[in-house]
Image (tube, rainbow, N blue to C red):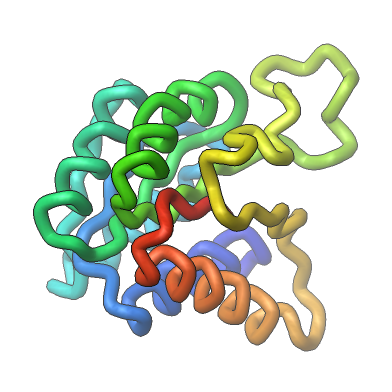
Length: 169
């Protein structure tokens, strides 16, 4: 299994182990492995997957689902301005204490500041509207990565479940 697929599979599995029941995906090329892993979980009956082409409407759908259920909902999108379009819903989640786990794909670090499309600076993109943010990094096939990825998801989920606003990994 290639590292991107492995990362996506582990992230989705850990979200499911934590109790995720709903996820909203605004698909794109960088987030394709996550979208496919979530689709597989939906086919297995482990997840309700909601797909929306428009990132802004996807993020507000996730906000509404989380508000209704009181449970964290995962929001997934691709890189660049797609992630920026989640920002209004992230702010609303923060202000109203609605639990979200926001997962934005990104271009590899070597493409930053090169003029490549969709390479806005996603580090701390949501500012103070999130309690915790981290950069997962480019997926690598080396010992310890699965435990590291699972720990990131578990931490994000725990913070989101505390109902302290939007969460971003």
